[in-house]
Every structure is written in structure tokens, then in C-alpha cells.
Amino acid sequence: MTEIVSLADATAATIPAALHGCVASIGNFDGVHLGHAALLRQTRQLARRLDAPTVACVFDPHPIAILRPDAAPRRLSTISERARRMERLGIDYLVVIETTKDLLDLTAEAFFDALMINNLRAAGMVEGANFCFGKGRQGDVDLLTRLCQQHGIEFVAAELRSEGSEIISSTRIRQCLADGDVAAAHAMMDVPHRVIGEVLRGDGRGRTIGFPTANIKVSDVVMPAPGVYAGTAWIDDRAHPAAIHLGESPTFGSGVPEQVEVHVMDYKADLYGKSIAVDFVARVRGIERFESADALVAQLQRDIRSCRQCLQTASLAKESS
Ligand SMILES: Cc1cc2nc3c(=O)[nH]c(=O)nc-3n(C[C@H](O)[C@H](O)[C@H](O)COP(=O)(O)O)c2cc1C
Ligand SMILES: Nc1ncnc2c1ncn2[C@@H]1O[C@H](COP(=O)(O)OP(=O)(O)OP(=O)(O)O)[C@@H](O)[C@H]1O
Image 1: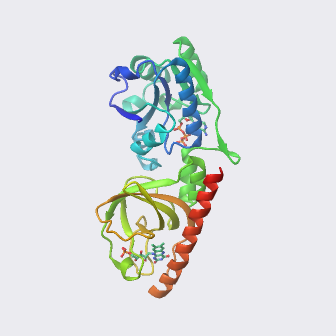
Image 2 (image 1 turned 30 degrees about the vertical axis):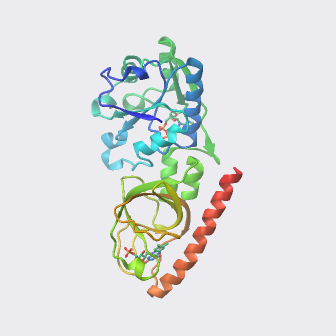
Image 3 (image 1 turned 90 degrees about the vertical axis):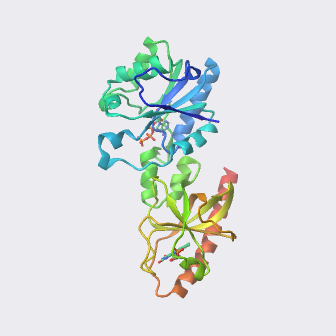
């Protein structure tokens, strides 16, 4: 289990002693994509060699939310989802550092002293070549290498992983989702994009047309572009194939732009009040306005077939990879 440790003030040496002497990596690790995973595996390897615990440090809220609130990106993954993904990579602790203006004002050297030396007393560090730290992102990997040398901390520079011709990053994955390309986001994270929320009562129209939908109130994560998607609904820890409608319902002149409605296939029980996780696997089509409820129903029947096919193809691709 990756244990979540909150650090309200990184400049006060309050981290639990169990983390002292760790091998650490700092970042946002939003989405815990394949680049992050490769880096965190190296963190694990170095920690094995040094017989040390493994620590990933993230900032919450995202630093941009403090520096330029209007430009702050929505997160790909909640903190607990990041911990869940890190568990499989052998990370013992996820330190969540509260981002404050004072913290972001520290020079690179002062930030390193506060977190790595006084708090974590790190034995090792692993970062990618594009890592920056300290006020105005002035500290780079060259400076980090020197600081680690001075303090007898073993430093490993992780190679940057790419997909296609471009480096994988959380920013790139957010862009894929904004374009509705959930399959590309999936390819870069190794898991589909996930939203989690409570099932609320909708207008009840879905049931009357033979396609009941669970209306989800989603937490503050990135939403893919409006459209119809094939996905998986996780109910009580069990996976069910699903057809997802994200956006307004122009046929009925109802709904709101980020409305998530999930038709869980082959499922009959009442879902109201339950919290469910929804994974976006493949995009099927855009939202359309239909001339009648019958025309929508005919399209929904085709959508269900397309969704089943997409899910089968995705699971075969996963098996063969
Ligand atoms: C897979 C799927 C695709 C849908 N596609 C459309 C669409 O293209 N246009 C539209 O107006 N509504 C679409 N709907 C939304 C239905 O209009 C909506 O689910 C229905 O109004 C039920 O809403 P309610 O449960 O809030 O009553 C789709 C629903 C599902 C489950
Ligand atoms: N593609 C990658 N391959 C290997 N390491 C990476 C990759 N992307 C980021 N890293 C490293 O992971 C750590 C955490 O980085 P961070 O969370 O800022 O990732 P990011 O995906 O680049 O995010 P953003 O898009 O918000 O800049 C840093 O050491 C960074 O250099």
C-alpha cells in the first residue's frame, strides 16, 4: 500500500522518521503516466540497492493554481488515484506538499535544503532530464546533480519516455482528452482516464426509452471532449461494460456541457447514491441532435454494438501487449 503523508509546511522538519533516508522523486505525477512509471521504477531500483524506503512528492494544489489561478489545469487524477497507481510501482509513501506562495518563492537551493536535507534526509533522488525546481523554475538537473553531490545523495537522471515522436507529459495527455482522444491518453498512461462520482437522479427519461443511465456527479478531474464513449463502470469493485454520454442532450434540449451519463450494459439494479468509477476507453462519435426519440433509440442500439466491439478490441490489444 502506498501511504499518503501530508506535509503542510515543507520548510518545517516534520516528516515522520520512517521516511528518513529515502530515495525520493519530486513532481506532480498527475496521471502517473508511462514516463512517470519508468522513473518511479528506477526510484524503486535505487532504493533496493540503498535499502531505503521510496517516496514520491507531489504538490497540492497544482503550483499553477497558486501562481496563475485562471490558467490552472484540472487534474488528470486525484491524489488517492495517484497513490493507487504508484502502489503497483513499489512506491512506499506519497508525500503531498501543500503548495503555498511562500514555498514557491524559495530559491532552488533553499527548497532543496528544506525538503531533501532537513525533512526527508534523502539518500537518493531520481528525476527526469526536464525537471525544474525552485522559484521561477530556476533550478535544473545540472544544479540538482551538484547539490546531490555536495550532500552525498546518489542521483539518477531518468531518460524521458516518448510515445510516437513526442515526449509523454501530463500536459499532452490533457490535450488528448480535450480532443476526445481517450485511446491516446490510455496508451500514454497504460490505464484509461478515470472519473469518479456519486450517482444522482436525472430526468428519468433514459429508462422510458429503454436505455437507463446513471447520472454521475464528477469530482474536479479533467473531462474529455463532449461525445459518446465506450468504457468501463466500476460498481462495488466489479467492472461492467458501459456506453457513456458526455455532454448536453440536444434531442431533448436538456443537460449541461459536462453531464456524464452512463448506460451500464447488462445491469439492472438501482445505482442511486452509489459512488462509481468510470473509465473512458474509446470514442465512438460526437453528440448529435435526433429528429425523434425513436431515431435516438435506433442510434443507441448501434452505439451499444460499437461500444462492445471497442471494448473487445481494447482488451485483446491489452492481452497481446
Ligand atoms: C450512449 C448514449 C449516447 C447518447 N447520445 C445522445 C445524442 O447523441 N444526442 C442526444 O440528444 N442525447 C444522447 N443521449 C442522451 C439521452 O438523451 C439521455 O441519456 C436521456 O435523455 C436520459 O437522460 P436522463 O437519464 O437524465 O433522463 C445518449 C445517451 C447514451 C447513454
Ligand atoms: N516522459 C517522461 N519520461 C520520464 N520522466 C518524466 C517524463 N515526464 C516527466 N518526467 C519526470 O517525472 C517527474 C515528475 O514530472 P511532472 O509531474 O512535472 O511530469 P510532466 O508529465 O512533465 O508534467 P507537466 O506536463 O505538468 O509538465 C520529473 O522528474 C520529470 O522530469
